Length: 192
Image (cartoon, rainbow, N blue to C red):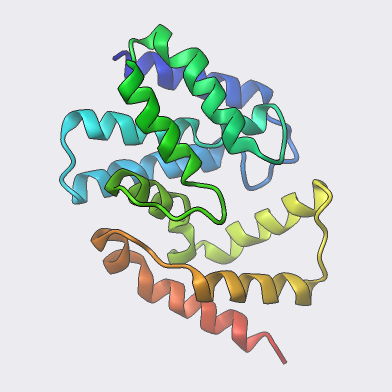
């Protein structure tokens, strides 16, 4: 597998072709999720091939935004299947990457360890210091893409999401759960 080539290809495309109104789902988000996936994969003791698969999935998970805003995961999978053979990925590896990408859908329930790592990496910011800033970028992006909410509606949506959200890996539970609960308490405190 030519992981470096696959990485350069997708980061170049995201950098050059993503709509500038993707304030949350921009290339910066992909890089953030990729870097977190490296960290979690290490903490979860993945082998080298598993690390390459999860890291590739992290780089490609939002590639569907190159084509359209909704149903982007399906389009990311299409790109995975079109492009990764040219970087030496086999069918089994592409299938695993595709399943990981599809596990990032909002209502998806990750089942494998790699899907759980991806889910945790994608929502890592919820348990970090920069959670408010990142949530604000999502709010702005949704508004720009036809999903506008009042501040009260947005706050209620975040509370509902955070109440239902769970980290899946031991690593993320340990590293992020406490700060995520602080964020939830903060949002509930705004409901006056």
